Length: 417
Image (cartoon, rainbow, N blue to C red; front, side, top):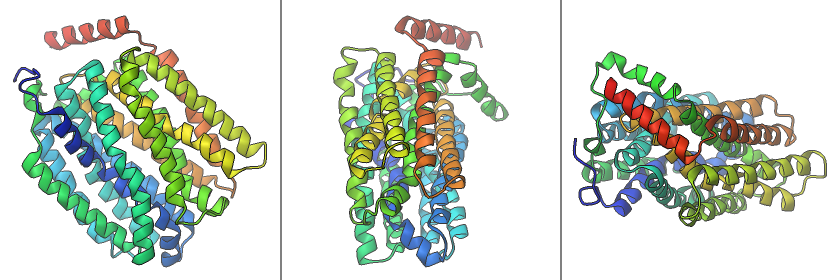
């Protein structure tokens, strides 16, 4: 194993740009087609919610892709897994341009997402190969702020393509982006596993490394904190076309601006990470961000279900509810990943799997109980907001000394093994 020093690590800014572009395959695949969902439903002769289910099936496939790809990347390397995932992503995007029903769309989106999961899981693992603690949090924040260009631009791009062409053009764009990333990863992505010890046991025991992650209580707390905060966002994401276009009567052309407002808050919160990290510990930032998110979802639930719903009230509260992911994600991810230097791919995979599976479940539950009001989506956001605060305060409940002690214990265990 090579020793990781500032001299032999890849340039962090270039690596962040590459990894951010790779991780952006997911928001491009989700957010670009959101404005087109009503048009796709009309084309298929199906209800809007039948097509919205494809968001949940995508998230399930995304979770499965990470579950498989994480341990595989620990075993064969980050770069090969990313390349395999991009090939799957490109081929299925091409097939989707020819589907003629909501059912076929859901199936192909599931397979497409498996490829996307392969590509995404190597990002967190690559960062963990090179960085620890606050340095890792800064790297995750840098990747996130670059990556946010994708969800900010994606709905606008989708709306433009929908105006000038048909919804199929959106997936042609995904083919082009996936192909570009395939070339970039092939020629430019470094193999970061050489900087860390990797799992060297029998292949049949790779999957048992998940148990090692699940046995680390505080790490699980950080993982579930990230999962809950993300589920607030995914709950909104799944129902956002109905909320803004159907319920409030916003046009598909206006939708990207309201959606983009959420992304702008995420970017702003993300950029606050570095100055906050100079004054606070990771767990302190998490507690502040999750408290702000809970306050916003409580306000949203009350504003929508007790008073007369108003777009002027709903939009700012949604912006805060969703935007706090810009603060929670880097700190929770870095706090979680520092427990697992030797199985970064597995750890990333488990966190991503639970995160996206929970998001998919939230979307399916919202769809099942959909009654033409905003009660299901706001209730889901409220429930996950409460869950997140319980996790950060009572399960993670970590102080710097606690984390250090846990890391030393884990290091001793690994040495003994």
